[in-house]
Image 1: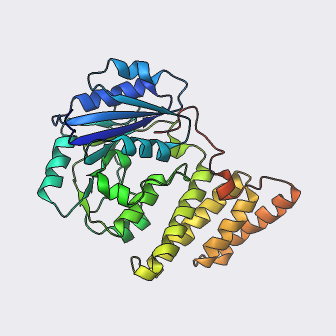
Image 2 (image 1 turned 120 degrees about the vertical axis):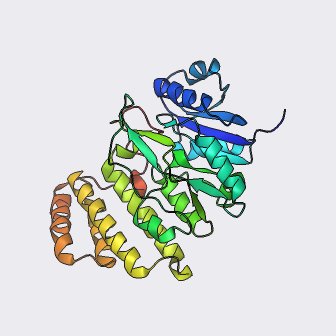
Image 3 (image 1 turned 60 degrees about the vertical axis):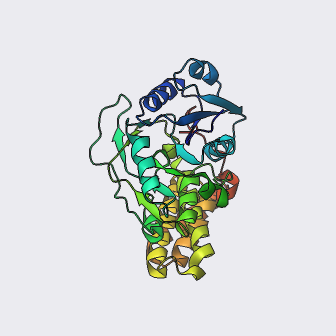
Length: 317
């Protein structure tokens, strides 16, 4: 069997209705030389039955529930194509998505990863205006550090790019994509297709919106880890980076306090001050966390709590 030019990787968890629509958007692609790999991340629904009669003839890989990073990595390992494209099971592609991106990759041999903006839609497919972040091409490290604008369902890249970066960090239940794009940005030029060719479905059960306290703490951890690992390489302006870190840690501390995670709130307050946040702003949160913590409350650290918060039966996007 000839190897396909592109391997399309779709992780899913209990979203069979939306998965069918995602596969339908793949079947309408004007570029046809692809394989589809659906990774069922421990669904209780019958994903294989939904995919069995679909025109895209997807390969379905089933694994125990491990999260989106592990699901995508499983798809990468199984991919036969030299180019990878990602789609989440609740999102959609426009028909020219693959054709445009493959043409861009072929026309710019020095650029090994392309992405673009996503156009948001409601759960029933109606456009949502004014919800797209500005995107940038080229060496994007500092811009990306300040704003997470590279979305998984838009990315098309050479497989070896991800293998060299050791793929997605499976210890992260969220922000695993942000972490990977940051690491890649240090070495790779990011190509940009400015037209939105992917659609992001906005709905209440998105993993990115479940347990925001945990998600914000993990985002802070990802940014802190990246900054400390790369600060000697001159990838980031320290003043710009630390302003971002102070703000992200402060917001995460406030969310942790509201969620009753007092130990986490206190630690994030300390981190926010370390990166330059005005102590006057963090003092009320730190004091409340200390007092309420003494009275009894949650004591999870970000590392302890990584996998304890799940969405409403949907999991992988």
